[in-house]
Length: 310
Ligand SMILES: [Zn+2]
Ligand SMILES: [Zn+2]
Image (cartoon, rainbow, N blue to C red):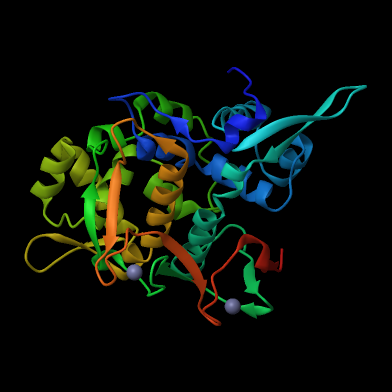
């Protein structure tokens, strides 16, 4: 892991031609429960190694590995704040702070759709009122769901290039399995390369077993296994015509998916062009996801949201 100058984190990372695209790189990085938890703490102000150790049931090996990776990918910057003895802190870069819409989406989804949590999730307030984030179009401010968009893969977008690599997956899988309860179902949905792809295909309209099989070029046993998991999570269900459809809970994960795509393509670019490209059907503008407040309809910004409770 080579240290990068701080300015790199403000720039877009150029990805190699023909290699993994922005989506694949991002899913490999963020599709990991420890990484999400470390970023959540960072967004709440944690900068010191010891503070993460105290806040999370995490081992030294996992924490230093994840901090190194987040620094390598430009989300954190390692800065010396004391010389004798030398001490470092990890500061969120603009790229790192930019993950807040993804984490807000995960929080909202877990809060309204996942009943059991090992730790009580805090509620959040916007300008003093409790709220839920609403996904809207950045162009026309209308609320948006998966069926309100047209588009799909761009020039660097194939399933193969959009999946986290097997290497990343092995690295991510080193997280201990006892971490039940922080973002348990989010991890089940995105912490596995085939799950991400299945969910992406479902949001793109795949409905039948053979759609998934053909689009993902995945072994049938994998598709069957993922469909079973999604049914257990109540994210997809068998439909009357012999296919599968997203449930209300599955559809409610859409804001997390589009904010992840947005962040991915904001910071990582393949030379061929975007991995995914969507327009909002109603207004025709290229789709830019935004969160607004369910209560006052104002756009949400990181700094206007406060946590209630722990
Ligand atoms: Zn629009
Ligand atoms: Zn509000």
